[in-house]
Length: 386
Image (tube, rainbow, N blue to C red; front, side, top):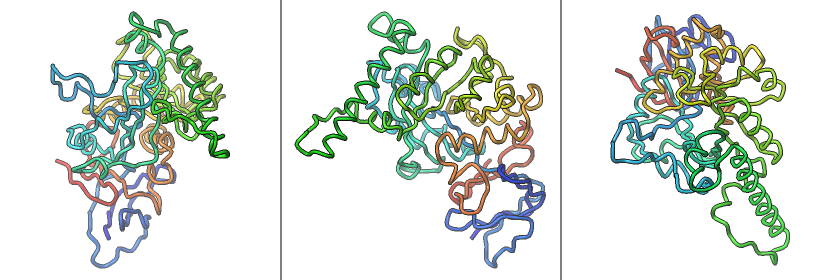
């Protein structure tokens, strides 16, 4: 049994507890409140003068990017740039549990990250959700059963393939995506028929196997899309095929904020601090989260990085102090909302009885660069930082 005492607690989904206790046992939160008795013999963390939040969640991370750390001769392990359609690849086969990104994120209060393939390909492969634990092998970190499929719209697939093969245009992007999803739907239908009639054998298709739960609406799709028209095209394709999906980056989302809200589009916004580094990001703005929240869009924020993810709370803080974002919305964008994107809100994203004991203990305001994460707790295991 562990107890964090004398802390100011931000449960996120409930009112702030000005001075309270959190009890942890067997990796779960077993009690919290202002008047919680601490069992004799419990391991105590005295958080007097400190704040406790749910562990932060990076919903769109790349902890294995070639840029972090850079090795000039090494190619990126997040993009299989040999075919625009690669649903058969899995990011788990590129992840190194010893990569310094995991340590940096943990020391920055991030307890969970969704590791995704990059956006070079129209269909880029399966992602993986992991806890940022110290681990020897990936199995010790992975949360199996929540592997999303990465899709990408816009400039990246065009840039990687346009002069060699389709797609060369946004028309080609959409057409090739629809063609592949149609093939996956036909393959899925044949598999369902074979389940009813064993005589109707289906030739295995390794490339399409991972898309079967996609076209059945059983696997969440993550659509990279910056420009407003790409966002709308992605949503239209997803609806045509009955996909469960979210939109990633949403750089141009301010232009269509009411439409996003009306259609209840799940959004993961960011990075918003790097400016217009390419044409489709010309409308990048740190006001985007506030505009979308005000329109009624519940969003998560992302750093879209590995080694730099620990800085995301400061970026959210700037959105609060300078760009109109409500403080409560900023916390939700780092906790319960990304948990919903990952379909793990029953386990992580808020401080509640029965949930995973994933917590961050801060020396001050977690959205301020004047504060640091003193303790990170993952499944009840306490990491003392710095």
